[in-house]
Image (cartoon, rainbow, N blue to C red):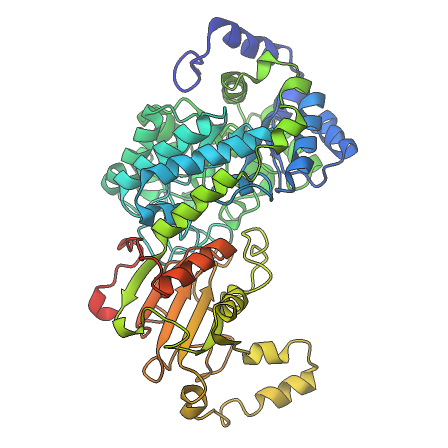
Length: 587
């Protein structure tokens, strides 16, 4: 049974009565529909109202667009929904997670190395101001994973770091900031990412900690969040074998399930042992970490029966809705578990006060909302964070810094990337490589900067015959070292390696051995490596003497990087040793 008068809901008698009355008046279809979080395919009124009327969805998480478009979408949803909607955004790095013209503040890792809890609070506050303005009331953040494996491609920039106390402190500050705007945070990814090196989008990726190790890390972390009133969590498609076998000693290895489908993890550990009373939403249901576990027709009711309250994203809406309905009618999803899920979903809506106004009054006036997006004061915080966070991780050639046009007039800028990914556009890393931006900015500062053209660049758009001709002499026709040293004074390698959706987060070397894509030449010419994404590139380029983590490729951030390279300001970020465990002598 769910206690709506207790934390995190803390509802008064009238609000509890609204929840109970609303559930009692629902049709079977409305009860099943309330379990789904839809990812909208369109923003038209016709599409949105059809989804509401056909599937009776309880929540939505949309792809960001311009603020005015999102406001219109959310106004349609709240105006036409019989029961007020939970409207979620991924405000992991700022208001840009709610709308494309919102303020990017900075990734969690950037704040972690700045080591100032004020920025964690500001990230939450700014995200809340901008997201709530356009009608969001739920955020799939903060990310509370603990970075204990530098090979993990999901955590990377998307966590505060590897120290549990820091992760808890920063997460609580984020919660405080975003809740000031009436947005419910959903911490992720229960029961904890950052241990395995695989990507649950594409693979099985368990958390391998023992029960004692988990209790001392993620257990302590989540208990701290729950004690502070965290209203919701997102469960990842991450197994926790030690605890699953703890609660079920006869469980075979082949029977271990991702937490999303595990009653041992989402009921016995989460609800009973840790006492979490809030809402649980699944991570996206298309990930192989989930879909590889059982038939989709079984996944839907099993997830709710295991302890999840909301199911994130339809595959085919008709199929998924009917499979959830059939699962309930067949007993795979019990009446008790369905009722508890509905109680928590509506309890969260009541906690947010959504039941106290008609739907057409749940959003602030549009003109007022637009005035809260992308404020200059929000951008100032982002720039202050960049100044505090950009990190000089390694400097074994101190004579290289600072740089200047007098000292290094001729610079070759070399781009390095990850394997091509369809996720790149979603993470903001598609399009122009930051190496192009860096080269242009260097020219504006008085340098002669060339952008390296790799063999992969040279074969783009060519016919197969032309490609064969270009590459046929790749091994025999290497350039003389003098071609590099006689023409350039410095090399700046700009790496933009984003791992999400890749299974690994490692540089992708498009050239053959000995090309300039790979920084083999560090003993021939001064070389600086700047990473604009992954903070963990030294394992693949340990020979580089000067290495800087910039954490993103925003224009203002690159300007600050160059200011620091030129000695106009100091490097202030503190390298996170949890992210790169090798001793200094190895790098």
